[in-house]
Length: 99
Ligand SMILES: [Zn+2]
Image 1: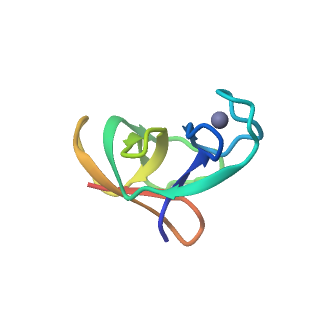
Image 2: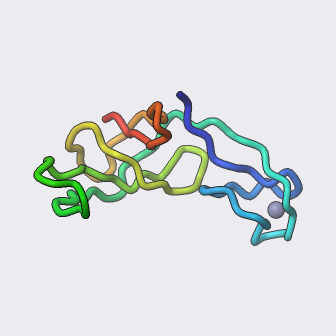
């Protein structure tokens, strides 16, 4: 599944997640803009999650998308800051970044 950010129809401001009103112009209508690529800004390993039992830690990354907004994504393999990734959505809606 492809990943998309939201663009204000009135002024073009792009956000993620979608907001009720645009902070720039007050508009309330958005269109989806698909974005397949981004760059890693930061990575982190979440080791202790409530209810996760003994499953291994989740690798997460803050990704600056090519469309503008930064998103938190599940990182499929360790990668360094500045490294390009491909973005998509899992079947359950999770944003996944692939180095
Ligand atoms: Zn706007």
